[in-house]
Image (cartoon, rainbow, N blue to C red; front, side, top):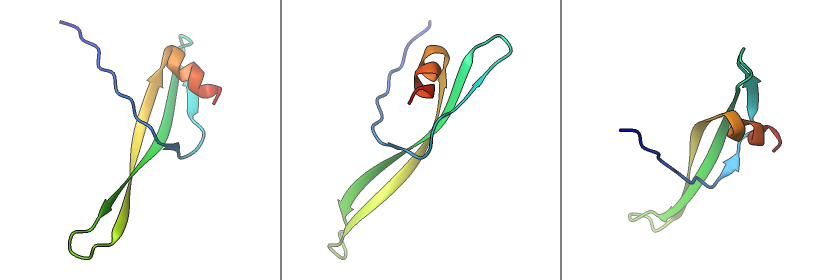
Length: 69
């Protein structure tokens, strides 16, 4: 059985998306997105920030939209 998963990730682009086309003209975009979270260190009480990088691949129409960013 097929299913659809949807995820919304808000963050900052590391650089412009890299878009390429396959031999049958399908668009593929690769991009890096940074998300950050802040937390208070329990031992020191210091406010810390942690950044995570996400590698994202987009296909077809979404890749074409990313190309115009």
